[in-house]
Image (tube, rainbow, N blue to C red; front, side, top):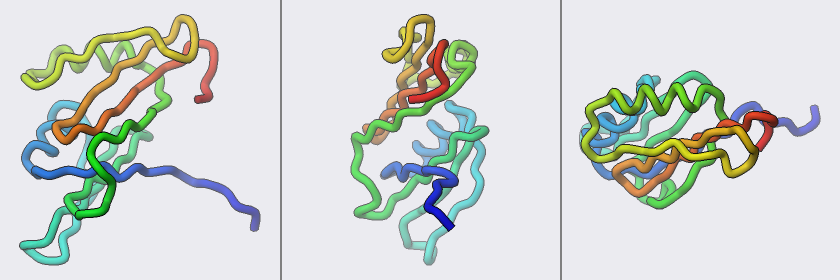
Length: 129
């Protein structure tokens, strides 16, 4: 069978479970799919998703470094921006910017509490990155 990719899932480093849940679940509107710890004292590893956006969040040392930027090709970015404006999240108020890739597109950039960045971009004339 030839090589193929089913899905790319970035691993985002987190340091505080409560703040990660507040940002990814409450603010971004993701769903907690599953979580795993080897024991009660072990670091958390969990998956969150919102539609086709799937992220792994990890407290494990070595699973990514803070400060990553993940590019998310999306649609409905203007609607997402409107939705985020209604949320009571005191740490972030992202703007709506033109897409860096195509005239007429829109981009929302959000930064999690750990220095990671999601650049959520809709390109009006192209569905490719």
